Image 1: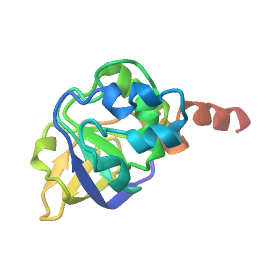
Image 2: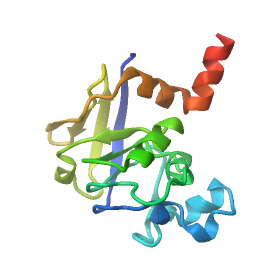
Image 3: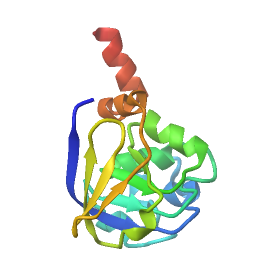
Image 4: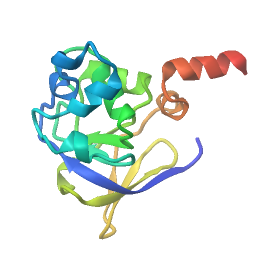
Length: 167
């Protein structure tokens, strides 16, 4: 796997148990990701959707993505340009949906150490991601298998399969 680095990723902090209804509100599910994105997490933080920028990261408490299996809850974060979601744990369905759609999830036991608005760097070299804080502290994340990183690199499972089909 080739090394990848995301620098100056701005942290958006959320608590535990962020559910898929907050990520992709049911009232907007009849629309595409453009409209869902305008309302992403508005029930939890009204400043998120209008303020998030490509390359930002969400840092949350445990059980991120609990709730329904709607894949738009992962797709909307990728659509908004987030570099990653960092949390100590995820709902199993959300975890799989996220990687299937090309959204990077980092499992980090020390996620609570990061502050709102902090600028961090993500180093993805080998299978163990490292988060670098501005003051030099390194936070190790759980290893990510190559097949999941291949999906992130390709933009999701379907683009990865399409690449393999044409190769």
